[in-house]
Length: 301
Image (cartoon, rainbow, N blue to C red; front, top):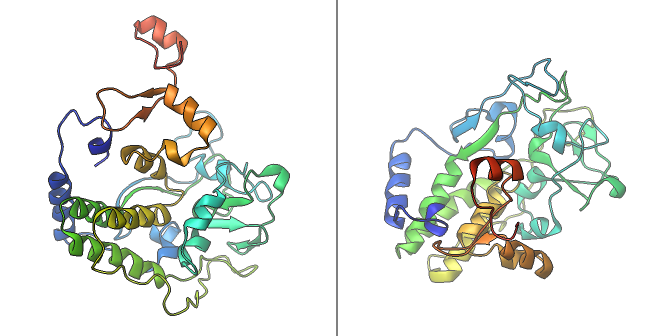
């Protein structure tokens, strides 16, 4: 799917995406985890929703060769608990969630939230946006640089929404709507994230989501409004899971999502010929470019 909107030299088609995702769905090997709030918790590891996740475990390794753990948690957890507080969710992301969507609280920590039974204060002098990523919040491991939380790379919800987008592109609109509604129906029944009461790290309190929250999409949706609805669902469902950048690039929306001055710089460092949509690039390290005698990426000479 990502090649379709970037460098599609292999001439992939939306029909292929539709067929491949149908094969996965029809295998009946996977299903949505009933509680969205549990996906990134211990009980959500290698669950019915997981097609692929990077396996990690706690260890006594620090920086250097870390054999089984991850630095993902220490880099993103609150400076007031044990982390460095990087990768702050934006206000734009927070605003994207529909009213009362339980996924917002599962995704984002704000000042004063209780996370895994611990009060979290966010210092504006240490944070760019006033928010932190709750999906990577864990209790401090024995060695901070070796977090034990598996990294979810491909979830069944992604398969459903990939097929929905393929169906929409193939004018199978009602099928696309049905697939998106599966994801929305699971979201609106989610609990609150675990540990929203001080000292009770593993208790899932009910969200008490009001009736009418996240209503089903109507079957009359088609064309661009249907694609917009799918892209919205992808953004809130997979928020802070490293898919947003590539979703923007492959759909040609990346530069319009940036401030004008940043977009201009990004465009000057992008591949713009022979691709479906421009692909922004980082520079090739100078030593590598010289040793391997490869041309530098656009705009970095």
